Length: 87
Picture 1: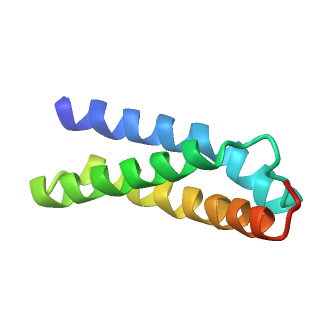
Picture 2: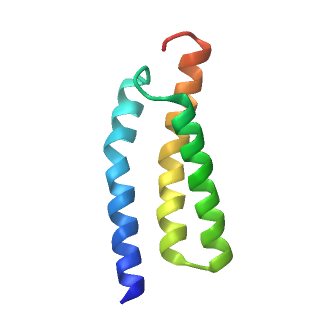
Picture 3: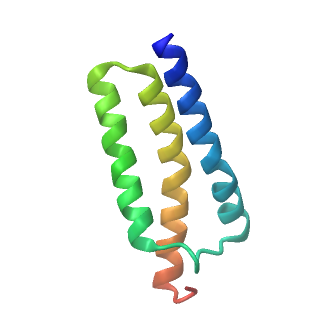
């Protein structure tokens, strides 16, 4: 039962992140996204992924691997926009 709850939680939290990722990747607009929040968020997700790997916990690994794959391109676009003064 615990694993099921973990996988449901992983799916819900990861899916909740998808609309922002799609919008940002489509529009490339990041002016209302905080650089520091996304940087710290991405680092936190990477740490959770590492923690899941250490524990061999599939739910933690899956949720954070997918979330990191969605967060890093947004962070990269944000950095690109900051460097090119689009934000």
